[in-house]
Length: 421
Image 1 (spheres, rainbow, N blue to C red):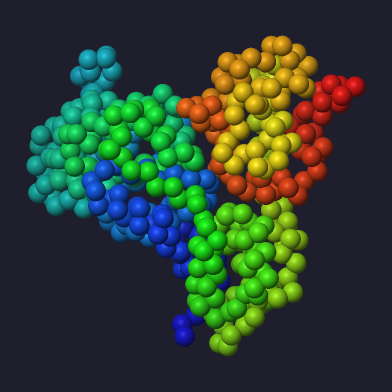
Image 2: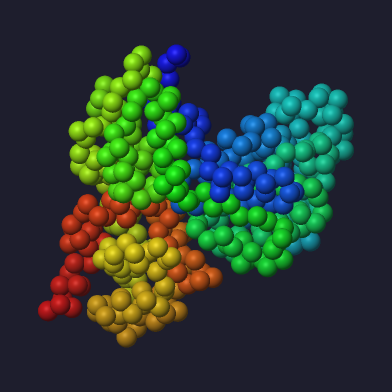
């Protein structure tokens, strides 16, 4: 039996984990979507398997990948695509109809898999284009015979107006070419892009990578046991499913810790029982405490907002996140409910209008990016006016913390004490 390291099974390296679980409700949907020639949206919470889904079901040569930045516009996305294909860009003296500079395209021999003759022929044409034009981008892709999927990662970090603009571009790509985009983002609803552009209905298929059913976790246990020649105790398996609540990243972490405590670092020569006397609750608590720095930073820096304001709405947005039961976040917390809750305790409650609150919520992702909080913890579904927690680990971590301590981190304790008095 060949030896496989515990890290290769449960680790968080860039490679696909050896215990990858095929989920019919996810993997089959993904493959089916790819075969239909539509654009594909892969969405879900942080660290729930979106990247692994792509790596498992697509060969590395089947796609190019670009990763979005908050400051990007349509032109930046298009330029990143062209560079991933192998083009080099430089500003042209010509201007677009909107007054911006066009760009010139060239290809270096060492920058692409194209033949030297193809590179020579493309460079001879002195390609010049408008980065905001779908037609121009298509022309550049066709010049080099590009025929791969285009993966757009971190789409949720784009400004909402840019997401809407690119939704329009996706419709054009679908109608004018056979190119298919795979859009990857941290959000929970299926219709994020069709809400931006209803014309995309029928032109995109959404795949929710967030859902891990108990049967999926059972398969993860079974696969891992076979790879390492170990046997997790039944009580451990049930406890992990109970406390991790579908957070597959945490499941992987607790399994790795159980193996380490048992002295298991690779495939065993004989079957080894693991985690029979493990205090699951305490071990999960210890693992979650490793995230304390990140979640503390989220609470402290998000509460400050972009700049000092009279209402200090960003720290008050944290009030329900800290105090409400987990059940209130299962389908997202309605903005109206948040406003009512905040107004009951805010020192100048009469000024907390729903419009001001939604305005602040709408910039929640932008604020997290500005504060370098990655992955993001919360996002606002503007179409449904609901705040959603997309990092499941936050709620799990919160359960092990003192509420008063969290309120102090968010700088809410003084105002709440005053309102009680």
